[in-house]
Image (cartoon, rainbow, N blue to C red):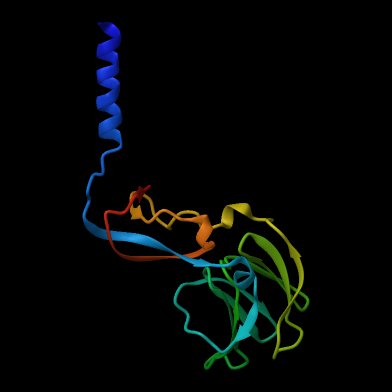
Length: 173
């Protein structure tokens, strides 16, 4: 009798634990994917708007500012009253930067990369250490106590999270 009661209670617990709570159509984060080869490309592009500016470093009359998770703005401030955006270094999941000589030390995804900036019209990666910052991978959205679509590694690397309406999202943190 005691085993039957325990079995019934266990079934009730499992049934309610797996129940879809049916939260409906709610604001949730949705992952944006990229394949590894594309996400590892670091290229110089035309200037971009500063939306989520981060850390700043200077070299001569140039300011280099992180655009969180997107890349690095290049700004000429020879005339501080009218700074001029010169370009944008596209760099997936960029969060950090330091400058020494003609090199920017930054992250690309979870890798440490050294970018040669000696030529103002081109940039190139001169060194890469794979997986130097494993905690920088975007495995979860930038929130707590929120709903999100579960990431699917088969779709590629998560390089961004967009907030949008999602019907009955499966994940929450």
